[in-house]
Every structure is written in C-alpha cells, then in structure tokens.
Length: 329
Ligand code: 2P0
Image (cartoon, rainbow, N blue to C red; front, top):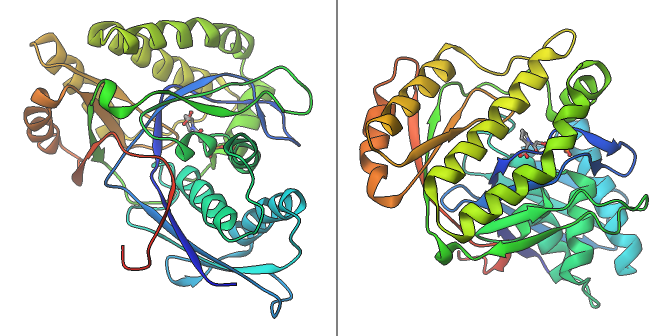
C-alpha cells in the first residue's frame, strides 16, 4: 500500500455544539451549524503497513504525544473495524495554523485522517459512515468533511446512527468571509472535551441551552437560505454568547476569553452599528472570528488589527470539504 495524503480545513460553528448526550459514543447534546473555511489547512498522510505493530503518529513533524496518538489510534480502530483492514498505520499530520488554540484543529485533523485512510483501502466507506466515525472522534470533525454550510445533527438514537454531519448549502450560495483575530498562540488550558463534561455536570442553565438548539438551527438555516445577514448575525452571536455564559456558569466557571477578546466583541458590535456587515463568533479559546460580507472584509480586518492585544489577523473565505490531494499539492 502506498501513502495517501488528504487535506481538510477547520470549520467554525455559527450555532454551537457544547456538551454530549452520550460520552462513550461522543454523541452531541445539541445540533450545530458551521462554515468550513479555506486558507487554514491540515495535511494528513496515512500509510497502512504490515510491518508496523502499532500506529505511528507524527504531529507537525514531531512524534505526537500519548494523548493525541491514542485519539488517532482510537479513530483508526473504529475505521479498521468497518473497512475490514487489520494493518497499523503511519500517520503524519501537519497544521498551517496554531494547534489546540480554539481554531478547530481536531476537526480538520480527524476529517483529513479519515479521508486519507478511506482512500487507502480497497472497499471505502460511504460519506455517511465517515461522518459518523469523524463525529465519534471529535464532535466537530464530521462538519469538516464537507464544504460551505454544514449541519451536524445531534440525533436521537442511542447508537448514534442518526448523529452525523451533512452539507446544507454550498459555499457559492453565499460566499461570506472570515477575519480571525489571534489574541494568543498558547494552547488552551481546558480542552473542549473536559470543558463540556464539566459544564454539563455543573452548569445550572444546561437544560435551557440544550432546549434552545433546534430553534437556533432553524433560524440560522432560514437566514442563510435567504442570505439575510442581520438575522444570521443575531442568532449566531446569541448562540456564541449563550455557550460562553453557560461555560461561565459552571462551577468553577470556564473562561476562555482574555481582555482582547472582550475588546473585539465591542469593536465588532460598534462596526456593525456603524453599517458594516460583520458579526463575531468565539470558540473554546480567546480568538475572535469576525464573519462578514466580502465587501466589508478589508475594513473589518484593518479595524480589528488595531485592537490592543491582537497579535495578528488571518483571512479566510468559505472552503471545500476534505479531499485527497497529490503529494505535490
Ligand atoms: C463547535 N466547539 O461547535 C464548538 C464550539 C468549541 C466551541 O466543537 O469533545 O473538539 O472532541 O467532541 O469537537 C470543539 O469541540 O469536542 C467544538 P469533542 P470538539 O465548534
């Protein structure tokens, strides 16, 4: 067998996933709706080999730590069961953006891993099976299999068979742009999985958060379908702030923001009030993602770059789903 390389992009949720209805199967407690980005990339190469007696995992050109390697192996174990393959793999995965800093590196990572693994076997799985395996590995990862606007259903079945991601609208339906304001390059202190379990166990507003999910998904889907920027801004900011308020209500509270994060929220709301089509969203980290109409993006980027505490900005459009690439790419 030869080495297959796949590329996948991070996605950012406009309607957030935070919490699990089943920890063992990694079933989300809420639906989520995301946009897949371009520019930021994970490249993952997979080579199944009869000569290996364990999976060998490299992250950003160095042997990966035990926790990361174990997650990759667990994902490959589930894949091997379904794909009927018993060989271990050497895996090389590289991100061109900060890992584990609230930029969804696990989403693009597992989407690229499964896409490469699937292209390396004789009987590939279908996309629905791949989406379920990706969700099992990381709740946001199924979303990075697809481009444009994507929904991750929380599902109701105990076995998770109806908890999968699927595309909603292609990127060209409404080509929004995203400015990411980086306010810290540090890895976050509380990972998403631990943060979600802690929140579900201790936050008093937990059930209200879960109950609101379907309504927010419906509002966002309608806004995207109608290309109604104000309506999308309203529901996306509400979902983001509700998620962070929920985390902060846990005991002890989880606070992923720094001072610059708060400055950016104010700046983006001020820009919108002054007529620019922009809204913010923030994940489990201190970076702020400003989603905007293309004609507003240059002004938004210039304004955010000047906010105290912003280290640099990144610019993305909507991107494609995970795919196999030639080694030369
Ligand atoms: C999201 N996040 O919807 C939310 C918003 C972070 C904040 O999905 O435990 O790394 O592996 O299923 O996918 C990050 O969570 O968590 C995430 P696990 P994951 O994008």
